[in-house]
Length: 431
Length: 150
Image (cartoon, rainbow over all chains, first blue to last red; front, side, top):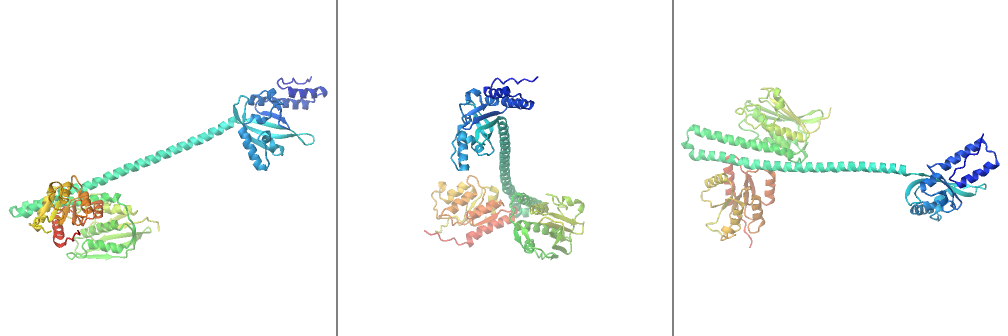
């Protein structure tokens, strides 16, 4: 047994319409189903459903609309248009935008809400709705024109959903992105600050080091001058009164002071190499080598030395520092060939892994390749001081200069069969 | 202008041993050289600019050469150099900077300030005394002092 469904209590308008139908025709099952759906739509609390007449006056106001907007249907029906429940500033802005888009003046009221729909254009927009109590919420509204039998517009249907949740999610996303940017910004600021601090620390350290070597340069050499100088004064003024041994001891004191002076100078040169700026330009290697040989006393009238200079390509680098490299390698070659009847020093260039590789070869005492790894260390000496003088810093200086040019230095040698020192000034590429 | 008592060579040096060695070297070369010694920068400037204890001196009675150590108490050697070379009355006095420093910055700064010569004191005494002697002789004997206008 089927009976008409009980009328919803809260909407006079809708029930009035349906009861009328029910009294005249026995409702079919399909009709009853449709009615149930219509009621459910009307009673849904999750979207607002507002229908107006052609002028915009509200004719239908569902439960969802009541819940969202805080008005009772009776407050608004036949009384106001939905435009009055919108943020007036937004309605004005929308009216202006539409006026511009369609080239016709559009009133900032209900017309602004339904203008597109009235032209048959699908229209879904986001606006802020204002509740009866004045509170606001973002809404998405879909507007449709309702048409009569002659296709004339008889009203409008505005279906709205509360967009607060999505807006909140969006806002949260924006906030998350902003806070992430803020975190990254903070990390960057922090990093930059740390780089600045480190740079400042390094500058201080560098200045301290400079002050230190300045002080070493001045203050360590001064007492050495006194030791050497007054030993010499004693020798000059009182030499004849001193026994032979006394004079010899004073000479040993002088030699010690001078050796220490040389050590200080070499160490300072070595220390300075790290902070000294490289000034690179292209230059003739041959000219540099000849200048170095000349500085070393070439052609050494009191020795038999044969210098063979091969082809030397021009190169690019700091000529002052590279001259020091040649000076150190060549003076070693001269030193360690001293006990040869004829010292032979060969200077040339070969290719190693595609890089120009300069070399200095001698027929001197050479060294045991087992100790080759110690060759370029500071204060590393391979020979006894009484055989060959030296501070043990020369090859360390060579290596540092070569490294600062991006090159490599190495040696090949055999005891008593001479040695060859090689260096490059560029990256080696495979042939 | 030639006053028989005028100072020929001024030596500005604070280290007593360096001073003694320099004097030994200078006396060995010429025992009669009239040398005035200042032991710090302030004393040196007082002498050159006739101030303080030297207020009675005539400023145009200039030393023929100044040997100047860079590391000095009170007023630094570079500042002494700056004062002398910056004053039109004294800027023509030849100044030889004599120091144990091999620091590049000192050399560059000294030349910027108008030093006439610069030598690094070698540890080796013979070279030290040669250098002192040669510089003293060079500026004092061989160098004609330029005429000062005014």
